[in-house]
Length: 231
Image (cartoon, rainbow, N blue to C red; front, side):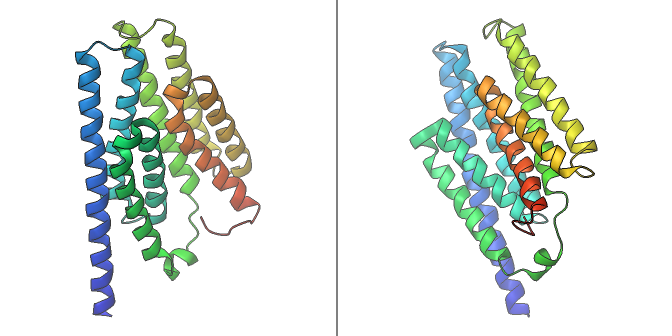
């Protein structure tokens, strides 16, 4: 039994190292790119890319340190989404960080694959967690856009998209707090609709948070159709 415990701790250390390393590298890349963009006075719309990379990197660090321990599957999925986001935004520059985050998720899923405790305890609040997380990201992007519009770093018509992101995030919070648990199917559908609206109308502000909302909504619809019993 002590050998199994030691093995478990060793795997968790690998997860911690890989997750923090991948997130830190992408954080530094995002900061460097943002500084270069500001130095050369490039189009202000281009600032959003490195800003979202920085936010995603912080989220990766928080997930690795605080979430993998008590919600490993949720943490693994979050790291996969972050890795995909880094590949989209940083392309080749984000490959190294993305691979490290994917490896972290692989070890997490491998560690929890035969965990009977996780299989017995249905994760009722996965969708709640993802919807809150997505709403926080969208709200943050809306506030950033609002601030950049106020100081005239981006186009004035971005004010509409910023306000739209903030309102959508507030709706996401309301769905997460008051709808998703008592009315999971309705909550899931609304979250997916919000995410689709954000992704198609303002991809710069909404795509990262929208991915988490889609994950939350899809999870509820799938679980309630009994396609899978556990997330």
